[in-house]
Amino acid sequence: MSKKVFDLGDPDARVAYKLLTGIVIPRPIGWIGTVRGDGTFNLAPFSFFNVVSTSPPMVIFAAGSHVDRPKDSAALAEESGEFTVNVVSYELAAAMNTTSGTFGAAVDEFDIAGLTPAAGISVKAPLVAESPANLECKVTNSMSLGLEGGTRLIAGEVLAIHIEESALDGDRVDPSVLDVVGRLSGNSYATTRDRFDLTRPS
Image 1: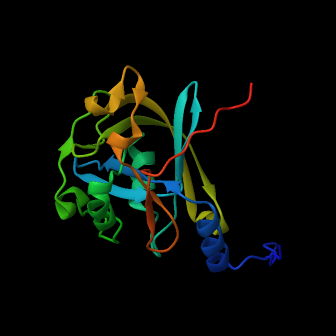
Image 2 (image 1 turned 45 degrees about the vertical axis):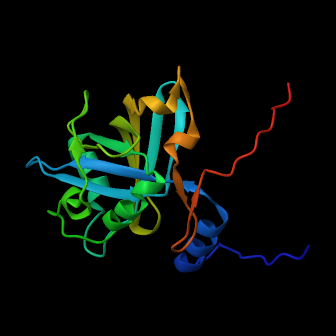
């Protein structure tokens, strides 16, 4: 096996992005809902996202910056102290993609994508009603990463979980019902339909 080595000691950000997003796949998508001070809503997808703890239950997402300002999702999560994570099922992939566009800071992506905002029980940030599962989160930590702090890393404690009843067997989730999509590189995505099982060694 022959491998090409890329020395990232003095990285070209574009090359690093293309390589990392091509290697770390598939990535779960955190469809992040936030609320503005005037009560209007924001919604955007982030594939730099994951669950990082179960005690307490916590997730993280990382958001880059626009040329002239931080990404709205990170800024609003920090300002309000809360956000939601909404699962992207295959049937919602096109709507998710619509909300990934660059819009003005006052634009409500729920309206743009034809989605329904729903109320949670613990946060004011909106849930995507059409999503098969949602997390209500309280911001616990945030920090700047990368060149000139251009990336904001947001950590949140999960306060409540909403999940489609047909996807549940007690407290176990049937992934075939959720039919989640993950991010690959470029414009490519993957489904969770092809799976296999491995028993962990004791």
